[in-house]
Amino acid sequence: MNRSFIARNPSILVFLACLGIFTLAVTVASEGFGLGLISTSFVKTLGKTLCLCLVAVAMDLIWGYCGILSLGHFAFFGIGGYMVGMWLMYERTRLIVTESMAAQTIPPTPQEVVDAIGTQIFGVVGSSEFPLIWSFAHSLTLQLILVVAVPGLLALVFGWLAFRSRVTGVYLSILTQAMTLALALYLFQNDSGLRGNNGLSGLQNLPGVSASQDVVSVWFLWASALALGLGYLLAAFVVSGKFGSVIRGIRDNEARVRFLGYSVETYKLAMFTLTACIAGVAGALYYPQAGIINPAEIAPIASIYLAVWVAIGGRGRLYGAVIGAALVSLVSTFFTGGQAPDIPLGFYTIAWVDWWTVLLGLTFVLVTLFAPKGIGGLFDLVAHRLPANRHGADYGPDQGSLREKEGPGQ
Image (cartoon, rainbow, N blue to C red; front, side, top):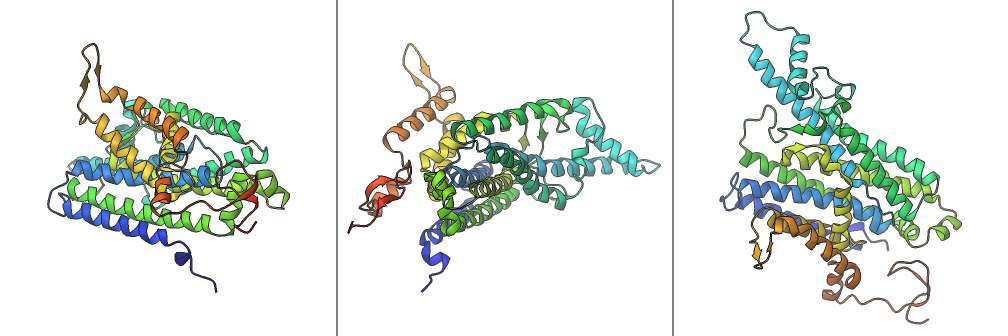
């Protein structure tokens, strides 16, 4: 008898229930809809954390399950933010320009309105012309489509070129990092069409919405929680069936999977493209809550941090990626936000704003050496999930990969 997808994966219900309870609790305690126990700024921090959890799930899919250590997925995250940021900035500027021109004796022509909008947006880089990439900035629907389409297309092209050449391992990681660096350097240029180093700002102001930031922050929290829940459900579905078995096989022994007749490159490309789209959606929800996006957000170090989050949480476990991203994000906010007291040593004072990255790096090293399963591995101990009695040589390099002989009777 075939059991349903949820019956085969009961942890999904647990995760969704915890996410729902968390979202409800924050809503009740917020300033916008509840008791005012949680400040609006912290509600935004929690909403952004949920977005980081979503991109961590994407990273876990491509690295923890497919075995591809991508150091470029935060680039897709940033692209999603730029796509929605273009509409937010255009529409907000259009409303301001239209209102200011309404008092003129002679009504402005549509071209004069467009020129004025262009001057307001691009005057900071010495231009007033709308670049070609802003062709659809007037349409929210089209820009939302681009949130998924642009990261997906970039991943599709890059992945096709890389995987058809059978680039693997550390070489593929270097290539993804090079892609991210090239994109960031391009966006730093004023003629990139995205305001160079200035980036896009004022994204927290929703055009045409009169609600206060107290309310808007909760709206984005709901949207981020919904996206994380759906993304987690999609990821669990992908890794639970035959497709999931194949990508695990690629992770453990790519040559053997290819020998069995599977198109390894096709599976890799599908995973790379899918996770890029998920990262784009996460970025589109993150940056309106952050209020600004600039090329520094796409720097390679951001993708390295993403890999660290997944490693600390436990790669190969979707809930581990969520735990790792949430924990590091919130702890980072505590240490870099000036809330952690400095430690005077007499000859030197440890300022956590400067030393947080050192602490994060040390944690990553310790987890790698002494707890390779990450925080998620602790759940195995709590649930008394002891490893199977396995014999024979490894089929793959990772812990938990299949062996030549399985089962207690062998």
